[in-house]
Length: 565
Image 1 (cartoon, rainbow, N blue to C red):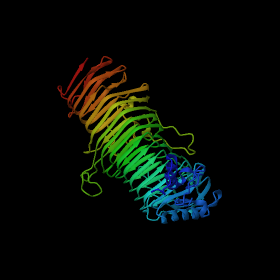
Image 2: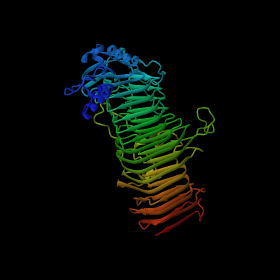
Image 3: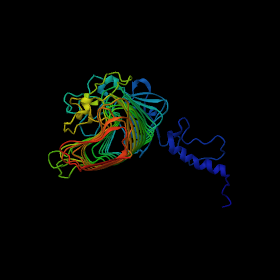
Image 4: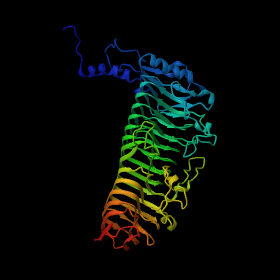
């Protein structure tokens, strides 16, 4: 004990910090991983070598000169890192041109702040990911399959050079296209398939030739502070998920051309928070499978068309989706839910289980809705506008015997462009289509019969403190309920039209309206149609309506009770 040297507190801290710096590796770019502080007088005989845990791609032959193909060198560094049971593959400052590379278990790819990983412009430099199932284009720039404990990080850039693969054709997987004649022979930027525990943070992802980020059948995913700018090719998605669980997305900024955050199939236990999105098509898009237990909060959505929140499903089991504290500026839609159980008793994938869409809530939403989509000036190709995108509204669309269940809107304020016509207002036969919202409204007269909310086949609908208004006159009702039952509307405020009713109910029952305010003159407060309409009550400030109630001949005299306060 008497031979043990005595260390000051400062010396102990310096000695203990050295292994941590070595382990962090590229966390302090430019500082040797285990270099002793110049003021330390202590010998560090047990310190690891300076390169321990860090695999600099230049040590494996990468040039980073923006001209030489560095694919083999970068892959060699990844392989060496994996063989060493994990570490950091460092891409330092420079422009590294590369074809397909595979990330492997235990590898963290760190792209330094002035480093750029550039996709090759030559198709022959890319291949399908090994172990990634074929279908929907699995040609890929960076991928991992059946791996775990992976990360991509750093303030550098991964650029797919996607403009080099622009042919003017998309993949033709939109409504009714079924991929016929589509362009699939182009690389996705990043694909992870059946991976567990991976993180992507701080990186700038841009210019993919196809989807930016495909995450397929993965678990335990962290996506943090990522910036995506992806607008050089058709089908330029941001995040695209299929059948993935335990996903947490925070602090990301996504500007893309196609779906910004597609959640197809059975995605479960997903949170999205503190992000911003802009795209020509939708942001949160759901379809098929078992999309369950998903929350989206504190997000900004701007210049987004094709409906920011879009749930379009045939056979599915979708439940427990919650959207809160969302600001939308200049959008169309803005919310669309379309659902049908199909013609085979609602079976899902032939398994015989009943399909459903239920328990979906929207709270603290502020939105401005434009009359029609507008091309983004930084997308170099024009995007067609569908007829059904004109004069859009919130759409809840159950078809046939299928009902949406337990849908709620709380503290929602939407300002619409207006401009809806009497011809649209007179529409009674709405096509029974489970298509996306613009498909439902794609028949003449184009657009929905309501400017605020159209709901068909909904059980358990709740509106609390909802306000609908428009910038210019709109001759449609604010709300149309068609085969809606068990609905509660409290604190609705809406602008009316001198030529139409404010609220239209068609074959709807067990509905109560309380504390309703008619904000501008309306011909009629409520019009009720259909023999199935019954047990309807309403009260509120109805003074600006010329008539409080109009019933068609099929409605019973005691079906509706209205009181003006």
